[in-house]
Structures are given as C-alpha cells and as structure tokens.
Image 1 (cartoon, rainbow, N blue to C red):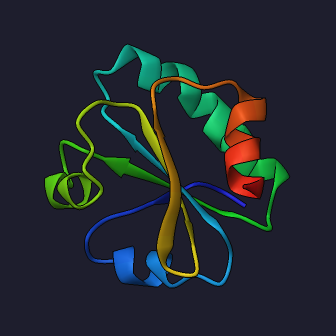
Image 2: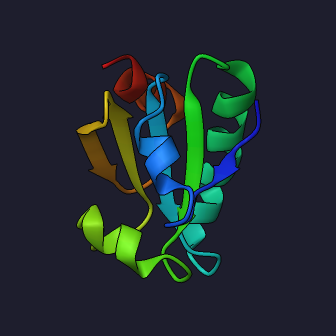
Length: 102
C-alpha cells in the first residue's frame, strides 16, 4: 500500500479509517523530514494493515494546527478516530512501528 497524501478534503475519511493511521506531518524543506520519509514509505509498503498518510504543513496549516504541530517531523497515530500517541523528531523504523502497535 502506498502513502496517502492527506488534505483537509480527505481527512475525515482518514480519521474514521478502520485501520490504525500513521500521519507524518512534514515540509519539503525540512531535513529530518526527508530523513524519515523513506522509512514511512517503507512501513506503508510492508504493512497493509495500517493506513499511512503524509500531511504537508505548508499546504495544510489547519490540519497541523488541529494536531498542535509546533515542530516537524511530527508523527501521530490515530485509532478509532482518536490520537493515541504523537511524537516529534526523526525516529528509527522500530520506534515508529512500536507507536503503531501501541
């Protein structure tokens, strides 16, 4: 499964997904964001049981504000429509998977 680009237009369907959701809040100019992007894409390809989405904070400031994103990259996990965990900064693959398995 590939990474879904999340916008305010499709966010409701993402939030209400039956699958656990990982949202990666990023910006194109952010170095640490570029470091974890391949990891997030790899997790999406290897784990079809999760919905993996990316939110560009420059294009979707309302979503970033809704999640209280003050620094990027920020990763948020949503289950049953609720944020269950959120972390800021680059993380290794094992940590991101642990967040999803929560």
